[in-house]
Image (cartoon, rainbow, N blue to C red; front, top):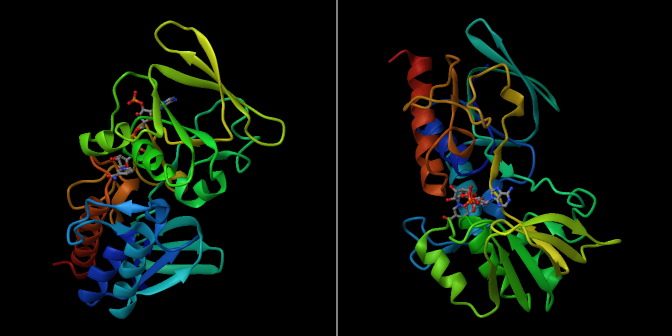
Length: 303
Ligand code: NAP
């Protein structure tokens, strides 16, 4: 039986692994896709302490992984399909079989929230993207749109200026939600044109994105915009479908925890973006992971 199984190899999961093995625990870290999580989709991280000038997201995650492996964290590619509670332990049914463990740390993060408009699903991968770092290159010298006004939208709009000839930043209000420094950098860039008080109501195109149908949120006036691609950054959804009915979630599906990362189920902890938290950053996920591992160790040893 494992001491701690951590689900999700992003900043929270790697850090939980590091703290778990350093506490003498037998820890296993499972990841269903590429290790690194959503940070892999971030080109440049400027607010993680210790890296003045910033660091590429994939490089930072490569360092986290090396650090975890060097200290003895077992990292496996596997997907958890079910978590069952059995007396004082848990059984995880995974793609590869069953794993028995004393505790579990849920660190499955978030995914992009879809816009939910006509054409979005049909043209996904054909001009509709949720990842500028992955797909931006394919839009070289084209005009594209970014939808959203948060940190992600504004940062990724700026990233796209490397490739695209013009980026329309479509926001439903007349003020961005993103932090001031990101806003200033984006709005000072002549390639970025904000379209204020505007929503996308439909994405059109025969085989790929050709046009967005727009609506002014103040006047209701319709509009349209010819673009070759649209990058959607309208927030996050918790990767918590596996935990419905198992642990208490908030109304948006984020896992509720106490300050020690304990959930409503003893022995089950949550860390990082998947939990209900006021801030979703690498630095907060890292802190959560450390706290969750130490709390799990205390739970196991009864100290
Ligand atoms: P977010 O902060 O929740 O912002 C979502 C944006 O999308 C908001 O501007 C919102 O408009 C808009 N929006 C939501 N639903 C919409 C809809 N149906 N139609 C049009 N617009 C819609 O999400 P995020 O930018 O993905 O960031 C998520 C978290 O990751 C945040 O905690 C953020 O700080 C963090 N993050 C940080 C960085 C960084 O620090 N560099 C980078 C990326 C992400 P309103 O403003 O009107 O609500």
